Image 1 (cartoon, rainbow, N blue to C red):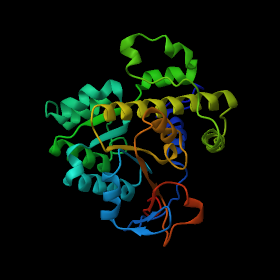
Image 2 (image 1 turned 45 degrees about the vertical axis):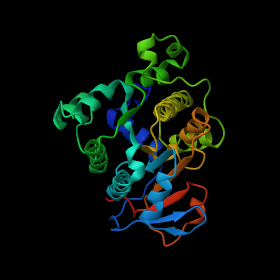
Image 3 (image 1 turned 90 degrees about the vertical axis):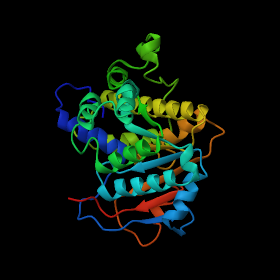
Length: 300
C-alpha cells in the first residue's frame, strides 16, 4: 500500500497501517473451516444464491480481509463458479493490488508471454502476501476462460505524490501519466472520512497532516478503481468483479460512492468478508453489504 509521509517510519509500519485502513480490524485466532453467508435481511444464503446475485449485477465489489485464507478462498470459489456459468462470458476481474501502469505485464502473463516469476517481479507482487493463493486462483480462472483481468488501481508513484504533495500537482500531469490515475475533484466526506480517521488515528505518531495525506491517497485509490470499473462497463464487460479491502466497500464506503457516481446506471452489489464466526447476521453488520460472509477469525 501507500507509505507514510513521515520519512522516519519504516516500511513495515507503513504496510501495517495502510493495510488496516483497507480491511479494518481483524481478530487473531485459529481459522474456522467454514463460511456462512447472510443477506441484508438476515436470510442465510447458499453459494449458488450468491453467485446468482453476482451474475445479475453489473459491478461486484468483494470486500476482503487481505490475509485471510478462508476469505480469499471463498472469493475464488465464487468467481470460478461465476465464470463457469452464462454470465462468465462477459465477466472481468479487477484487482486493487495492481496499478494501471502494470497492465502490460499483467496482459503478457495472461497471454503466456511471461512466466509467473517474471510477472511477480515486474509487478512487485513477489511473496504470497502480495499475491496470495486466492488471487492466484482468480487470475488463473480468468486466464483459462480468456476473460480480462484489470489492473484497476493508481500507479503507486502517483499515489505517493498525492499523499505528500496534494492533488493539485497531479492535475497538471501530461496525458500519459494522467491515464494512470483518477484525480478526484473533492474528497469523500461524511461517515467514510470519520471512520477512516478513527481507524488511522489509533496508530501512535500519526499526526493530523499525515492523516490527511493518507486520506487523499485513499480517495485516489477509490477514484481510480471506480474509473477503471466504469471504463470496463463502457467496453461492454460485466459483471466486473473488483477485489478490494473491505473498508473501501463496507456501508457507504468510498469506492461504493465513486462507482455509483462514475456509472450511475450500473447495478452495484457487494459482498463483505468478516473475520469472525457467527450463526446469524450480527446487528453490527446490518447495512454492511448486500451479503456478509463470516469466514472465521484470522489465523494466527
